[in-house]
Image (cartoon, rainbow, N blue to C red):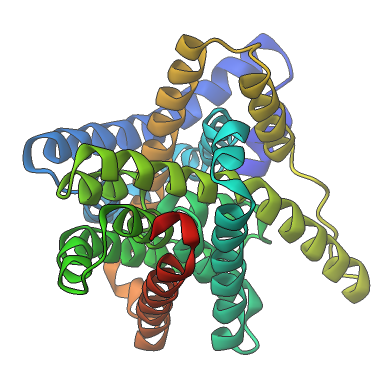
Length: 342
């Protein structure tokens, strides 16, 4: 049905109107779920992405109705890619430069090592490995959604993406609570603590929250380190797209071109960094991106039943937890070795 909608979307005005009417109920459902998640997040402090997923699952029976399914599918795919594309405005070249060669190399090494470890632990399921490894290594739920958008589509991938988002969001919340306490017990100074928090916690919001439990200066440095990790996301996506394309050519099954949303991601990053986009424009794009990702994750939650998540397996939860702990330990070790943090 979605393929048919896509073919008619750019036809006559009547076709466009009928397409809009067909996807409206599903988008409306995703919006209601997203608004509920945002309300609860603002009043109770829980992660909005996690709430959107959980609330969305409650509406799974409704999302499977013929009238709602097209809009849910549109939200979980098209709106997802649009939200990821707008993330480009968050990439800052100056943030990368400000950490120096040693700091940037350390962060890049942690990121690459985490993804490689995820691939090794996943054994033959390389898509699962890069999805979980990238989510832990870069920026949690946002990275999981971006990486998922670059992988060949399938029901198994949707379930794994949902599972990964739930796991990394929950672990990131726990890290926000326990990492500052653990680092204080280990005798880390504020600069070292900021580096570890920024280099090991998955989501940006949790990095800020953990840093503020120490001091405002710690939160600022931790956020800087975290944004350098986010800035490396386009490089990872490019490597992933090239790998998937090469694999498809060798197996003669499919070949995935460079996605349009990834090109937009790069263009927006460039425009934001050379000053073409004003700060107000970049803030607006970031806000729209946040809303689109909330809608997309709400739709993903609505598409998946809680029962289907149990088929993913406990081994994958252990893998994500193990990667999280390894990243924390490696970040703590590097923080003690970097001369500028001592």
